[in-house]
Length: 98
Image (cartoon, rainbow, N blue to C red; front, side, top):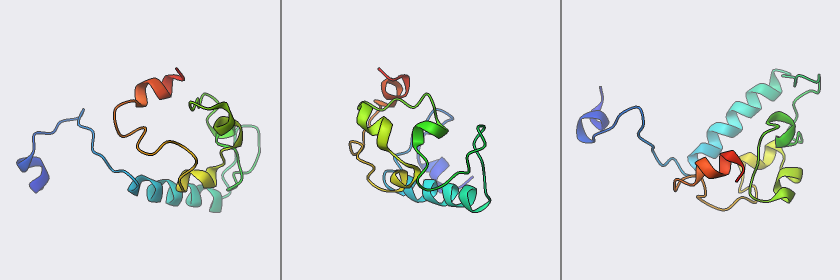
């Protein structure tokens, strides 16, 4: 393996802080799905203006306004979510909707 694996003790549970670079991956993946004409189970065509809650019904951000208004295009930007909220280990509570 590469230098990373010999220089640091890592395993399958290691979390890497990718910070804002994850927005690029998310945007590219969504763009590919939209360009390919991906549809939701209800037949709705995926668009940049599709609400995140329509793609992920169990998505439970800490603010109901965010849940109602956040669109896929927002996931590639600041998206009105607290910065680094998921990078500091609070993601388990956030994912559970608590």
